[in-house]
Every structure is written in C-alpha cells, then in structure tokens.
Amino acid sequence: MTDSSEAFAAGDISGVIGSRQNDRIKRVRKLKQRKYRKQEGRMLIEGVRILEAAIGAGLVFEEVFCAQDFLDDASHRSRLSQLKDRGARVFQVEDHVLDALSEVATPQGICAVVKIPSWDISDIRQAEATRRNGMILWFDAISDPSNFGAILRSAFALGASGYLMSPHCVDRFHPASVRASAGAVFYLAGVSEVDICDVKALPFLNDRPWIGATPKAKKSLEDVDPNQPVLLLVGEEARGLSPEALKASDVKLAIPMTPNADSLNVSAAMAIMMYHFSPWRRKI
Image (cartoon, rainbow, N blue to C red; front, side, top):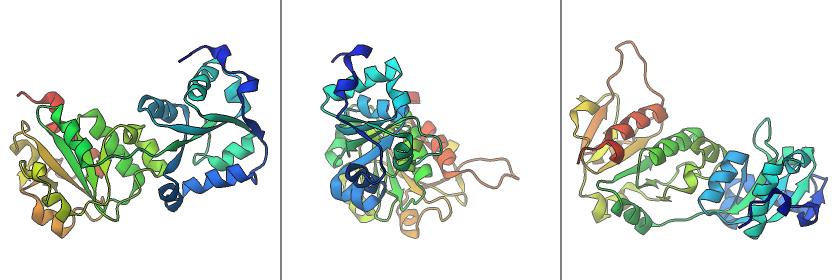
C-alpha cells in the first residue's frame, strides 16, 4: 500500500459535489438515523482521528467526502491514497455540503461511509482467551450515546474482552457514541439485543462474579479481589441498574467518595471500576 502524497491526484477524484440536494448526499445523510444504519449496514464517520481508528481496525470504506482544504494538505492526500487503494471512491465536496454531512460545529474536512463491523458471542470468547482473566461489560438500557462511548473508550484501554447490550440501549454506532469512544467501538467486540436472561444462559459468564455498581451498596470496591474474571453490569446514569440487574448481581459495590460529594458521572464511575479489575494491573 502506497503512502506517497503524490499518489493521490485530482484525477483520482470520482467527482465534485456542490449541492446538498445531490442524490448521493441525500442518501448518505440518511445514515445519521439509526433505522437507515441498521437497514444499510453502513455508517457515516467523520474527522481525521476517527478515520484513522477505522483504518486501523480494518473497516471497509466505500465512499469518502472531503473539502478542498483537506485535499490541499499533502499528509491528507497520503491518507486518501490508502483509502483509494482499499477500494473507496473519493468525492470532493463544497464546504456547505460537508456541513450537511457533519454532526459537529466545526467539521474537520472529511467524512466517510464505512460498513458497520459485527461480532457474535464467539468473538468475545476468543478475545477473552487471549487474556489471563477476562473483564466483560453488560449495558443495562443505557441511553446516552456520549456516556456509552466514553465507557467503551475506557473499556478498550483497560483491557476488556468485550461487551453485551440489553434491548433498548442506545445505538452504539450513533455519531456521538463513535466520537466519545475515540474509535474504540471499531475494535472492541460487542453484541447488542442481549437480555439478562440471555446472559444467564451463557456458561462462560457464569464462572465469575457479576458486579453491580450502586451508591447504596454497603460493600466498597476496595473490598473485592481484583484478580478474577468479572462481568460488570452498567446502568443508566439517571436510573442506575434495573431491579432485574440488581437482583442478578452477585456483588453490589459502591465507590468510596468524599462525604459531601453528590455522585460520579457513570463513565467516570465505570472507569474507576474497570481500572480496579483491569487485566493490565492484575498480579496473577
């Protein structure tokens, strides 16, 4: 694969788009909606950092849309050359067209359509087999995409093997989830639509304690041995874990805090818990 900045030239562009009403643009804009992402099996990503994460994870790029300023940068042309070599079609678009594709106030000059990655339970088991002890998450109807993405970012960094999502969770490929995850959503194996009854039916998840975090718990995080595989149950920030999830928890934990402190954001709380159980800091 070439990395020469001269390898991508004006002749490599598949077309120039100057209208938001262009049929291709209208089709791509639909991917901002969950139902179209699900129907098409594709998603719209944007920004250099997210694009690089998607390239690193081996996602399939189909279409790339970039502004003139982006094309003028030699390092960016090198990146476009890589995507062209992978079979992506590259379009130059006017700034107002890119604004229509973007979900952020200040677009970085590039968006792309990629195929949504998919995993199954066996992928999580395979990932866990490469670690001495496994840490897996189950999301209980979490609805905030930024919180979900932030938790996934920490999970990936701290060595989680994968995650499961209950029905009624946020779309993990929501643009805000993808941004908050810093691309971790492309790497970490995850399976959606997994009810707690389905989790209970998975033998490899019944050889470990199920850990539920709740501020009302009497046991502190520091009271639990970190040197063991765990299933961490993650609740919605406002509501916490559902009654069913709390009942299923083998251990209910609270994070010690300053007495006058109100609470921790769910992503911060989960980062602390995941660090405690992280395979990277275990002694065995």
